[in-house]
Amino acid sequence: MGICDKAVFNNIFLQWNESVQRFVLSRGISTDESLDIVQDCFIKLWQNCADLTVEHAGPFLLKVARNLSVDQYRKAQVRLKYKKHLTKGVENQDGQFLLEESEFKEKVERAIASMPEKSREVFILNRFDKKTYKEIANSLEISVKAVEKRMSKALAILAKQNILKKR
Image (cartoon, helix red, strand yellow):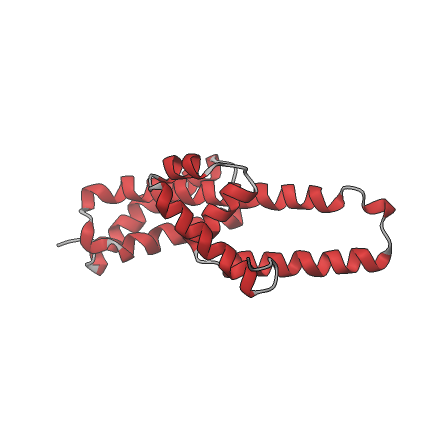
């Protein structure tokens, strides 16, 4: 019997649930967010159950938990940088400007959120973390061409939503 068997999956869940949650909590993730991450880990395990053996379930869960924790951290960093950028010099701005800036910020956030996950990841790493395409390719273990394609998709989404001007 493999992981796709509900009884086997349930046993894996009972065996690994607390360990994965402690692992996520140890990475500085809040309790609520850690529960979401743990749930996502088990969803990914179920989605990949045909490709994994019972012996590999634990390491798989921990690897997914690590990746999702890193993603959560990166999202928090982006929000923090963006918030700092927006609040810089706010005391000298008039109300209309602040309203327009707030509306634009929401529009940008919605556009970024609407991007496919892989394109969003490349966009954030390049535009917010200031990584080069080569650095992104190395960290994601993909080719520079794949990074270029993902960035192209991200920029097309921004252009379509009138956040960027089309060239």
